[in-house]
Image (cartoon, helix red, strand yellow):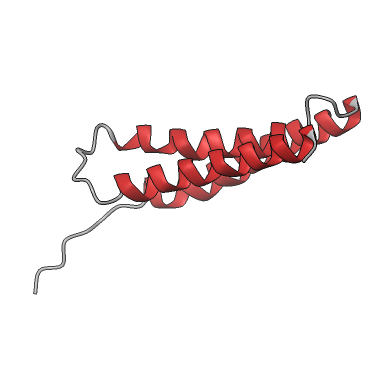
Length: 95
């Protein structure tokens, strides 16, 4: 097993550990104020994939710029998609 396979295996194990952490925490009763912290394992998984499997640290500059552009457009897409549910008013139905 060479160094590249070893690093891929360690990254894969890190992804499995983060997924197990998310799965385990999903069974806990967590207060609403602390729930945004639950996105941290997902961010860590994305960073592991980008730096490990995509090898962005050693990639050419054009690949890095496309990766940053993808993150930017994903943020725009999710931000615009969240404007509808975040601004929707809930009206009580009396009947």
